[in-house]
Image (cartoon, rainbow, N blue to C red; front, side, top):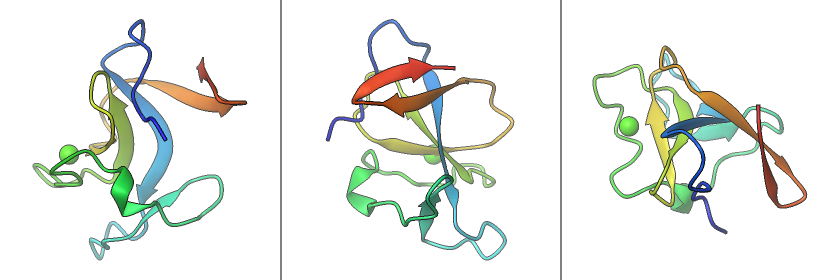
Length: 89
Ligand SMILES: [Ca+2]
């Protein structure tokens, strides 16, 4: 499963996942739509790191094949999955 973005996207893209319990700083992360636990093998190396605290949402960074946690105040576009292709929202 590739988690890298097409080269024409912005640097950061929200993908619809979050920390299961940000108050308790849970180690579990879930997909917003399904509620399923995120496979920990999908994280980019060193992530999630809660750098600066409050990084409770998941995103992709262009050029890095894996998930990052990031603070929700970061402005970025969203990506939705459609039949194996990207749909930028
Ligand atoms: Ca991070």
